[in-house]
Each structure stands twice: as C-alpha cells, then as structure tokens.
Figure 1: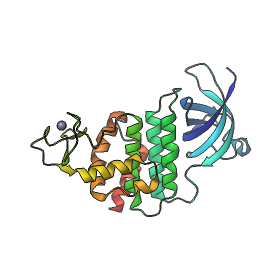
Figure 2: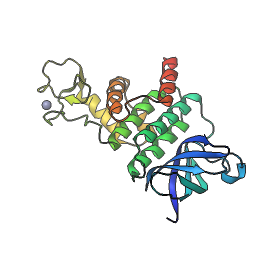
Figure 3: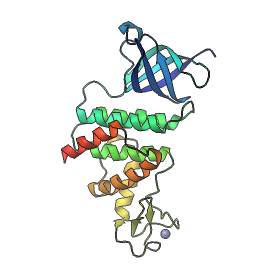
Figure 4: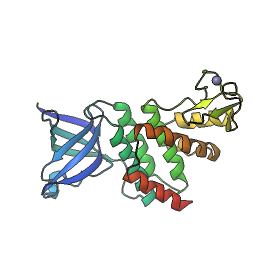
Length: 253
Ligand SMILES: [Zn+2]
C-alpha cells in the first residue's frame, strides 16, 4: 500500500519502543485510531522536531503495513498544539483524561470524524483554563459531548420510558441511565425542575467553552454522577489520567 497523507491526526499517547523508536497512538478522522511506529524518533531530535507529543495536531505520512502489524510514520508536520504550552497541572490532567477517553473508545482503523471533532474541540478548552473552578464544568461538558458522539447521552427533556415531556420535573432513574416523567416515576423524590433541565440541555448542545462554563452548579452535580455511570459503559475502568484528574479535583474541594 502506498504512503498515505493524513490530516488532521492528533497524538493521543506516546511510548518508547526498542532503542530509539516511539510508538505513537494517533486519532484521525479517516482511519480512527492509528498506532504507528516512528523509527529513530528518540535518537534524532531533528527527525520529528519534538512534535510527537500528546495534544499535537499533525499532518502525517503513514506507510501502511498489512493488518495486525504496526504502520510506519514516515513524516509529520505540526498543524497546531491543541493545548498550548502555558497550562497548569489541572488543565494538563483534564486534557490527558480526554485523550485517554478517546484512546479507549476509538475503533482501530475505523473512520470516526465525530470523535475527532469532539477531541479537537474540547482539548483547547483546557488550554484556556482561567480558574480552577472551571475544571469540573468543563469536565462534565466534555463527558456529555463524548456520550453524545457514542449515542449514550439521554435526552434531558424527554421521559426515557414514555417519551413525554419532563414537566414539571424529571426524575433520575435509580439505575442512573436516564430521566423519567412524574407519571412514569410517581414515587421518585429525586426531581430536577424542567427549567434546570432545559438550561443544561442548552449548555450541553453548544460546543463553546463559554456555554460549558454556564452549566448551573445544581445541574452540574446531578450530571457528574449520572454521566460517570453512563461513561462506565463505554470505558469500564478508570485509566491513569482519570485517576490523576480525580485526585486533583478532590484536592480542590
Ligand atoms: Zn414517562
């Protein structure tokens, strides 16, 4: 197979291989997750000019091998650094978590432009982090965005059982998978007013960082728990970056 020029390709993860090489996990629109071998990337600084690191969006040239073996990275150019260089530890934790999620849910060699779009939208949110308080809101909004890409985000305005409007309030199902109307869940106390659900829906529908920061605090705490449970369906175990982010957020409380 001839070399293929792929753009954009976002670096999710990098690991040393043999004496001088790197294995780079890329997320691409055309081919989903693509793991490539960058020969000599550690022995020669010139070869890839320090751009094979997480959060870099690249244009890459890939020599494809037969299925099941590692492809070769023969060229790479930086398009942009999604995170930027002046970020604090919390921002780095969140951005690493987002890349970790993408690496878990991406299908190898399977086109997924929506997943790529989600990643290139949400990682830059972390780079602009202004206040530590912004971190939990951005995390929830990014998780909701990923659940939407995966088709797992429940409609926050419609009953998950009968499809009716959640008026005057929605009740979270005990198993945490969705919301029910007052008719379908007459004995549930855990009610969220329709106005809050509408506000959450508006915030989550936007891919703007500013909308994510407008998620009301009450709605956010409701979502945090429920979205986590939904996310566990796609990513059964918390990875290293998720654990680091969690302990960082606990420290902020
Ligand atoms: Zn209902």
